[in-house]
Image 1 (cartoon, rainbow, N blue to C red):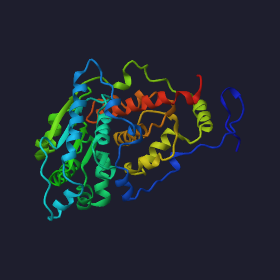
Image 2: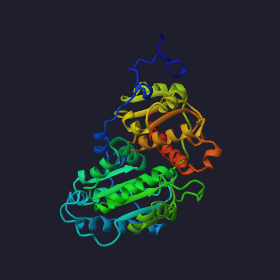
Image 3: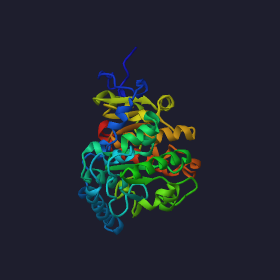
Length: 366
């Protein structure tokens, strides 16, 4: 087979062949799911001090102060393991701390809710093994892997559980997780969460605290809602999404970048249907850049939702995405962008656009 040609006939590509996401079929053991319930790599170093509030949005500054006080108050939440002793009916239950046992960050996408949620995790005075951080999907995957009772036992000794992107658009899983959280609150675990909007709630860029508190039913009294206003920080003063590169530029960059993957978009979408979304993080292990050729609109909602999960995992891991074909703001149809999952699609566009900017240096000048 002849080597692929470089742009403008500048010779064959001789660099080592890049990796392929389509060639990977990761298997993730349950113990890894538990061990990886920490803030993703993108948020390893974030702290309240590194959150830059928008000076035009005083609610952002106020939220930082409330969360700092909430974190410091968890130091009196009982000794490690007290929740487990209470769960199994022996030992004296810890004295319930004053104030709410949960906080809910209510704001549009891109206002820094995950930054603040991760900062809360880092600021809470407890060993990492006594704090858990994950998305709603990752939490439901944990329940699926361990079973409900084992998940309760595993998390009940924790000081804090942070849930990012609580998915109110899935009634069955919402009831499951709400029941789990009730058990954990009874065991003395503090909670923090952000959420997605319910289907049909079309407030532009807004999450609805009332919807969240209603869906978690009896737990609402345990949560204090913090409203965080603002525009998507990824677009504050930044240029529009960069135009796509050519297939040849993407291919050459993939060969020239150590640890890069190279896949055609259509086969990748087909491969995602064969890999459980709980494994998308493992799918990207060791990948330094994702190169895609022939990006086109996704054909249906199931495919679109899988792509959203992959975009989240790539964004969490700060993996740049270099692509040819259509720009990322044309991935989803108007029907999708006006439907019940619109928040997820706008978040995916925002995150993929940010990763596309990060990938600009890989391809060189246009």
